[in-house]
Length: 434
Image 1 (cartoon, rainbow, N blue to C red):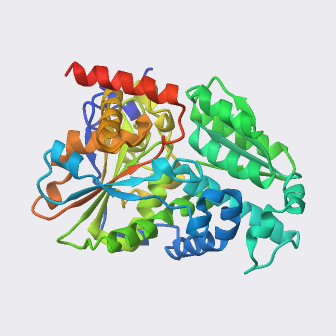
Image 2 (cartoon, one colour):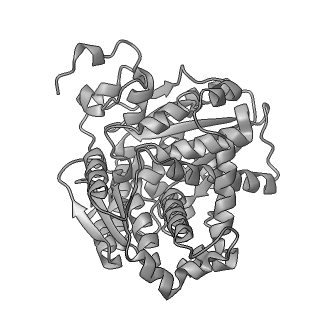
């Protein structure tokens, strides 16, 4: 695609980026946390409100997802230490962990933290307006047949490459909503099939994620009693993700790990449109301040957040403007244009962005299965690829300190056996040829 002169790389972007070469871009706009928060339009107390809401939603979540009942209806994942992986890649100082959202009991991906949260929030809001519940009520009553009959008169719409659509679809259908999911051309067929099996209406598009989101937004505008879960603009979605920071903080504290200037925390976050990594970053900065460094990871073909942050937030920028094709095995990260909300809110918070190749995703998906029996989808392996490729550069500011590294593994446990076996076979072939 021809690039206009205003979009030519003037040195702001890493030189290898338009060629699809893996790169590390250290964010020159990052600021100390107090200055960064002062530039945000969002109130940090909104995260606390989201944390409290999750607690209130617990009895309802336990009804909708009985597998969470033993934990009081909490949507939480394990923090697993990876000593074998640390030894394999030669980490001799600090510690390495995986945040296991790939196995979240609700929907098997980080998108449950945003998607399920927004569905529950909308359900409570309209039920409260209708007089079905009041503040402080036991919300498990919203799983009763009469509540489902009420929700059936309302529609939920979302645009997705797969995991957000499934999270919205599963929670919405279990509550009784009429659910419509608009999916881009790069969404996996099995993700479409499982939504259809839930009873959701799947609308397929031959275009990319941004166009699917636009189509869903327009459809919601045309339909009464509709709510659009906006992956690009929703603050509710953003805060659902941000609440995960407290969960991680509690787990780190339980493990007896200090996080301070001499013991920094580095968190690697797969990034598509940006809602999940952006929300988590916002939440982590609120908890840990300057002691945490958040790194976004994107595919080499889809570095939408990198180009957006590097070139400014005054207007949207697309990877297509640089001749990149947005085609990647990491379907959950196949996004050409970043969320303007996330770009604006985290521009001064994120440490930087690494891009990784599809081959490295398959290799690390395979290593994680071999050594840890973690069933990741390609996008969920991106943090490992980034750490191995660029860890030396990323960790320069903290090279003389004891670093705790957390790789956020974002999805994969519920993928079909055939899909996972095919990815493993490709990964094994790549490892054998090295």
